[in-house]
Image (cartoon, rainbow, N blue to C red; front, side, top):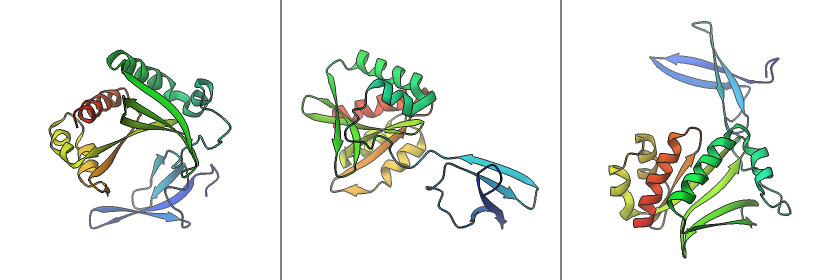
Length: 189
C-alpha cells in the first residue's frame, strides 16, 4: 500500500500486451482502488473498483429508501429515474424485499403476476439488477440494442440448467434503456 492507502500493482508491457501484477499479492475483488505504476513510461494508472459484495446484510434492518440512499450514494438520482421509468411503463409489476439466509442479504424481487422479471441487489455506491433468461432468449438478446459486452456476458454466462443470468450494474442513464430492453425480452420469454 502506498501513502494514500491505495493498493499498488506493477504494469508490465510484454510484447505489446499489458499485464497487471498486484503488489503485494492481492485480489482485485478485495479492495476498492489501486494505482498501477508503469515503470517504462513513468505513468500512474488509477482504477477504482466497486466493492464486490452487497451491503444490505443485516436481517433486522429493512431496506427503506433512507437506508438504500445511504448505501448507493451518488447513484440516488439514477435509482429514482429507473424506478420512475419502471412504474410508468410497467404499472402491473410488483416489488418485494426479502432477506435471504442462503446469501445473507436483502434482495428485491420484481414480478409480473407470478413471473419473476429481475432481482435487484444494493452495493456500496451502486445497485445491480440480474435477469435469469432461458436459452430461447439468446436470439432476442443478440438482436437487441444491448452493448456487445452484455451480449457476450449472456452468451458465455454460466448455465443453470436451461437458464443464464445477465446483470446490469447501474452507472449511467443509458443503463435504464438496457434494463428496459431486458425487461421486454424477459416478459416475452
